[in-house]
Image: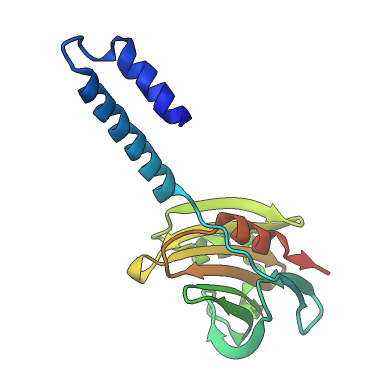
Length: 191
């Protein structure tokens, strides 16, 4: 109702000519309140409630909190530096639309390559947001991008020597759950 009073004061204090009827002024106020309310609802980022669980990596080098019990898998891969190795993943799908994951790998071909060069190669050209940061003293990049069907992708890439960590949150609904994304990213702890 505070928005309604503020809008009424603006409209009633000479913002419109005196020849505009009080009914028209009220309709304009209602339209303004509805428009502002709609923008607030549309721009609101949902926060989902999860049962967070701390997961230790199988090799004991890091821990991370997942919004549920994370499953793991291994698969061969070729890196952006040309090396061939195995990537390891922990992931958890939550609900119909969201998934949280962490992949990591040791890339022998990255030896001698500056971490910033690796981060540059891994950064999507279609990213809508890229921010450099450090995570526990190691170079990192946060990347936000949109995928097929308006899916929202949030990725934190951390370089620790020859090891790369990629923390990813994908939400097919197209809405970023910023609070839970930050909780996930910030729970990453190196041992």
